[in-house]
Amino acid sequence: MEPLDLIHQPASDPLAENEPCSALGHHCGVAGLFSPDPLNVPERLFYMLFSLQHRGQESCGVAWEEDGRHRGYKDLGMVAPVLGRFLREERRSRLGIGHVRYSTAGGGGLQNAQPIVVDCNKGRLALAHNGNLSNGGRLRKELTAAGSIFQGTADSELVLHLISRSREGTREDFLREALAPLEGAYSLVLMHEGALVAIRDPSGFRPLYVGEKGGATYVASETCALHAVGPMPFREIAPGEVLIVDRAGSRSFFLEPRLPRRACVFELIYFARPDSEVFGESVHGARVRLGEMLAELDEAAGLRADVVVPVPDSGNIAAIGYARRAGLPFDFGLARSHYAGRSFIMPTKDQRELAARLKLHAVPEVVAGKRVVMIDDSLVRGTTSRIIVGLLREAGAKEVHLRLAAPELKWPCYYGIDIPSRDELISNRLDAAGIAREVGADSARFLPVDRLLSGLGHSQGYCSACFDGNHPFRPDVGEKEGQ
Ligand code: AMP
Image 1: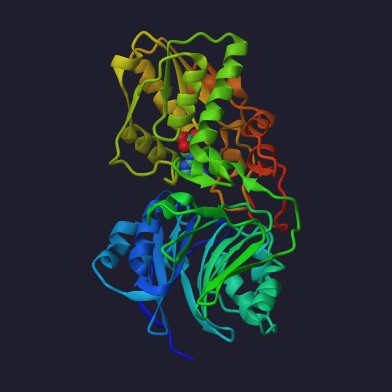
Image 2: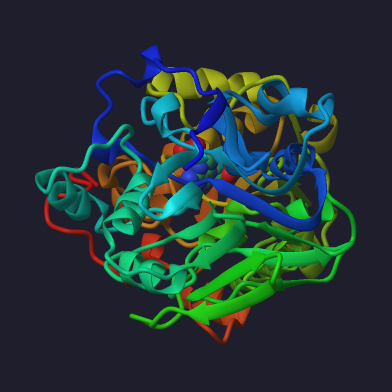
């Protein structure tokens, strides 16, 4: 067997010290490609991962096959600084995969960066994972007790251990055996002995797409990453599908469904990029509909307002839908600094507030003397809303009505969306009227869950557990404690 040739995988990471296993929010993006004719694979992966940057900004990496070896490069940081070198290097290859990683403050570190590249009894393997296994803690305990060694704390290594432990000989058989015990969300891309393998869990929690261009096959979490390579026909990889692409062509087999389909509705509300399609839906179109539904509820309640203002950028599209449906002007009453970082993952309340203040600014020209409908995609702790309602009032807004293009967020997610502990979620403490009082708004309104689901009209089923507590897979006792 060829030795591994990792050209860059720094060995130690001070940020990773003392990291508790359960603290990981693991919501990432994956990409992969196979081409019968050699291409500059790491360069193509750069373009795809750059388009998936919104799915993870903590670390990124690529792995590819070159001269019969698996090579890898990954580091903490964003795609442009970490992987920009591949725009200047010429590397001929037929096969590669890539990953961008999202995690909460303190929940990451280099040992969790992907792809993970290994050599094992099944040959050369590399893996990148989007999602979270709800029974990951139990599987890890069992494997550790049986002698497995783990380098990081993410669930993704489990999959490699299960593959390696399988006694089955063929790729299809050992994948079936390795994946059978997994519960929860996994969209995976693998390189195995010259083949690209793309796998979507049978519930279809996380999106995964495949497209073809110029004889090459591209796989990515969202279609925006396929478009980054150029226009191409694409399709959704089906829940439970295992797609294998190599020099013999492409073929699929299917994993046994354990539960009905459960596509993560939060992908449409917040996470995915608006120019993408996920779960067969246009993200932009879904967000417009959410805004329209809010406007219909306000119309029925007789709300009178002068202007619709989005919280940029996450509220922009729902605000367009709201304004159109309500027949009100849409305007940018909040300006966003693109130089401020992400407030959401700051560890303390003071830091989050400061970050929100640095990021958003009211525009008096738009809001002074006006009854403002302020639209955001979701309310988590309420930090952002409290700051910006105050800014709008300071800028002279006469009334501020807070509208959320999502239901009340009340429950943890075990399938990969980073949600703080239950007691940090403002909707577990207060109802809409109480929230309006706490953030200083004249009123607050959420989208009811049944309205959200019927309005999106998805026949195949969504996971809305973060809103209604209806978790398709319960985590094992003791896992994700405190949530
Ligand atoms: P908060 O200020 O805590 O109420 O957070 C609400 C803001 O965080 C909204 O503007 C959302 O766009 C954003 N948000 C919601 N969920 C997440 C998440 N899981 N990760 C990062 N940002 C989020």
